[in-house]
Length: 131
Image (cartoon, rainbow, N blue to C red):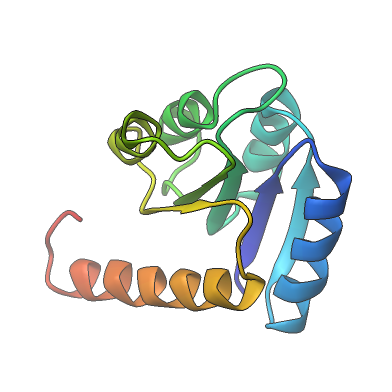
């Protein structure tokens, strides 16, 4: 079972994603800020991280950069954010995010994008290329 770390300060978003992702067959962990996420990620070694870009203590893109240095192999990363400017998207993707979705979002669309990104990562690994 794939482990997903969900990082968002909004308790309703955390609850919604836990219900939907658990129902889709994923194991979930929840963090409300970047510091808590870093601790959980090192302890639990998630396969996937879904983070809000605007966390109370750091940007989601900064969290992803730090995770790349501390968690091996690096988890598949996705960013959700109410801020969806071109700069926000570019920053998230250049920090290692495989995908970016703006809020409000469809939980089902998020699950499908997780699956598509997992397939892409697996295909890239099978061909011996970096993605």
